[in-house]
Length: 370
Image (spheres, rainbow, N blue to C red):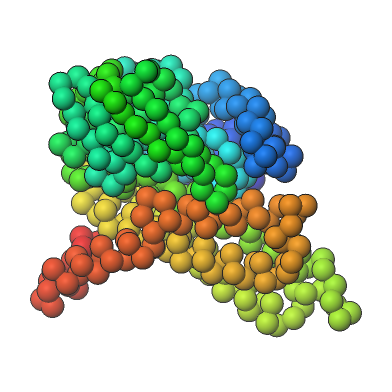
């Protein structure tokens, strides 16, 4: 098994040359740069190491991986960029790469020129109450990822527009807030802020493109973090001796970790299915909404199980600053709720199943069309 296959859990026959290049680049970068000291500095509010990492990411062009080649991007598919999002989770890299990648894809497909600087994303129907008057915007958005460090916001509006707004202008104010992992999830107030560009949003078949594709991205990040916590728990169980033998020799520990491994495998497969269905142009598969819902549900449920079991296996040491487990588990607790919790996505699927009725339920379920 090659390094790329092991790192990303993809059979060799399905790995493209571009995916291998992307996976190798990002895995090497994060292995070298995302150290425990960097993550501890980030938790303390020292963003200098993370900013240096973001510069390296930009130099590699990872933030433009999904952008078409004619717009000076790599032209990669979602399936080919899956290793990037998975690696963010596995390394717990504290940077807005995932949001920038989605934002730049949306801009490219809407025909809006790529700006310089970091970007964030907002789904107005879920995160904001906004009023657009001509070329100005007013209102408030909440839980905006990395807003305080972003130059631009890409906003999907309720009237199917895609807006590009400069967050550094006088008409914008930002109130800092964090998730459990200390990642910025800020509130942004627009007071007659100038809109730099506006176009009909792409991916017309998705009612809320930022919300749906954001949930898919978080699913891949969850998979990476899940794989990390399982690795840490297994390593601890194999080396920690209790009552004269390693913890991993106890049947109860083996069974608990095997249950977690099964849940992670299910989450990984569901996420890969969604990435295979996801569009980089307007040819969206009819199964995409269903696939994303299933992926976020499976990842959220796996996150709840894995954090419970791994902290039980490691005991009190897993909660200490000295150990690295909490870097991943705090992100699992945060990311499982972002862009819709597993419960909210399950409710959406349940409501669709009820609407399909008894006669249409099985047909729609097997067609992944709920």
